[in-house]
Image (cartoon, rainbow, N blue to C red; front, side, top):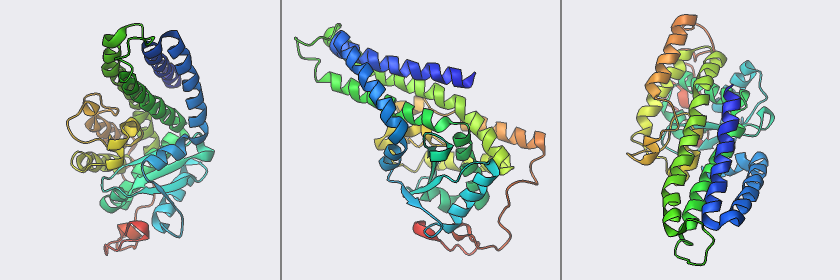
Length: 311
């Protein structure tokens, strides 16, 4: 049922994109927008992951450049029964992460250096298990397409402003319709993003808890990330707000419209659901292997030693 609902919402985004085209250029604009939407969906299917990773300056790492982090993702992938995804790091102080890719065979997971330098190994395991749950649930393609179309709607709405003063344009509602479109279309796109993301985040929280075996690790990580995201800006996310719903916690800071129409469920509700899951399943003493006392795990080392490119 969630996938049917998501398909309806994606269709709504496409219809909204066509509606913006109609307001700008009438029937011709609507047909053109439909063509653009089809082309964008095709492009996003094959290249959306590369586009999003590039937007956030993500750099691919491996066993040589980030051995501890790479090994962590590999072990979690094995527990989830997934192919090993490509692993990326984003040089941002804000702790956060996301997953992308058209299917599990072509997936990528990305974490910020702030995540690795701030959270414990167990908390990072919870976060990356959540992202792998998105991969396993085939959420990543939906989330990437949503980001692309929503960004295009905002761009097209702003583009329409330059035609608002042209008396000879084909916009059926004239200058006032164009101005209204500029205001309402991005908000409508944001609301659809919100509905799509919220329906998938709870499922990924549950799936991530099952993968790592410790819901409390993810609950602890969510609390720390949410607190940091409110005070540490993420420059790349601020420049690409249409991708905000892809992150485990909304990366946008400040009191803005982006927060009014949040793309994520309330963090306290997610934490409460995870802690209830831990209590109900008795998952407090089992699961993914924790670091032994005094063990050396690169950025999670008890000596504070930093390893890999985030050192």
